[in-house]
Structure formats: C-alpha cells, structure tokens
Length: 233
Ligand SMILES: [Zn+2]
Image (cartoon, rainbow, N blue to C red):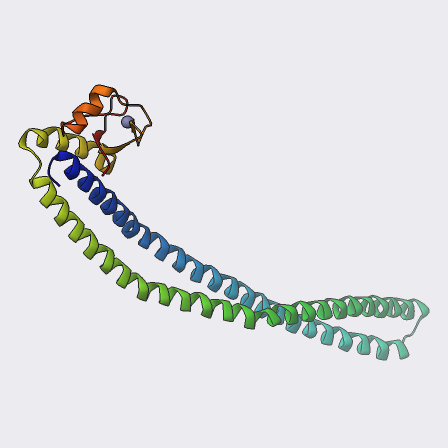
C-alpha cells in the first residue's frame, strides 16, 4: 500500500463492505415487520374461522327454536282441526298446517346445511391454530437471531469505518479535497477499478495517457462516469 492506487483499492473495498453491512442492517427491520405481519395474518384467519363457527352455531340454535315453535303451532292447528265447525274453517286450518310443514322442511334443510358448514369450519381450526403457533415460533426465532446479527453487523461496520478512517488519513493532502467531494456525493460508487484498460463501473475504455498516469500513481478520473480510477493488484 505505497501510493494512492493501493490506498484507493483498499478504500473502495472497505466502502463497499460498509455499504453491504449497512444494507444488511437496514434489511433486518423490514424482515422483522414481515414476520410480524405473517403472525397477524395467521391470527386473523383463525379469528375469522372461529367467528364463522360461532355464528353458524347461533344460527342453528335460533333456527331450532323457530322449528320447535312451528311444531307446536302445527300441533295446535291439528287439535283445532278436530273441533272445526265448518268446511271453510277446516280448509283454512289445513292450509295453515301445510304452510307450517313446508316452512319446517325448509328450516330443517337450512339447519342441516348450517351444521355441515359449521363442522367443516371447525375441522379447519386445528390446522389454523398450528399455523399460528408455527408463525409465532418462526418470529421468535427470527427475533432472537436478529439481535445477534444486528450486533455482529454493527461491530463489523464500526471496525470497517475505523479502518477506512485510517486509510483516508494517509491519502496525499492534495487528493483529500477531490476525494472527499466525490465520496460525499456518491459513497462507494465514487471509485472504480480498471479492468482490461476500461473503467470496471461504466466499461468506458481509458486512454493510453490515463493508463500511464495510473501507473505513475496519479489521480485519474473516468472521463465518462467521473469515478476515481485505480489499477487492480
Ligand atoms: Zn467510468
């Protein structure tokens, strides 16, 4: 690490690494939110299914009550039938009985249907409860690992920044100002290595003069993208 080429190479490596670490750090809260959302989603599906079972039970109960009342009504009509005093009254009662019987079969069908749906929904509950438990376990695992990962990334980042500062401190004085201006604007994108006589970032070929200057450890910017160029090892 004698001239600026070696320094820029090292600085670029450290800046890229710091950038990657920062991305990992930033990604963690987003992953955490996704885990929390998954738990909430599973809990919501479970709650909706439990509610549906509850509502169907209420529906069955209410319809059974109506059915019982209708049977009572039919029995009453049949008693009245025996003491009917005219054909007109008899026919009217018979008509009521037929209507009530039709209503009873409709209700019975509806009750059977609601019972079937209730059973079907209730059968889904164990799987849904399991899904909630699993989502919670995954979330807890992620949370535990997240703290460790965060601490590790932060420690690595602090160390990388420290190393970066040490390298930047030994940059030749005349390069400090242009270097600082460029990295302030573009971060790790302010530098690029030269591969096969081209800028590795934008693939623009460098001139023979630029190549000579780089070999002499001079400060060279890519004519196309403006990055600080350095030769690879
Ligand atoms: Zn370039």
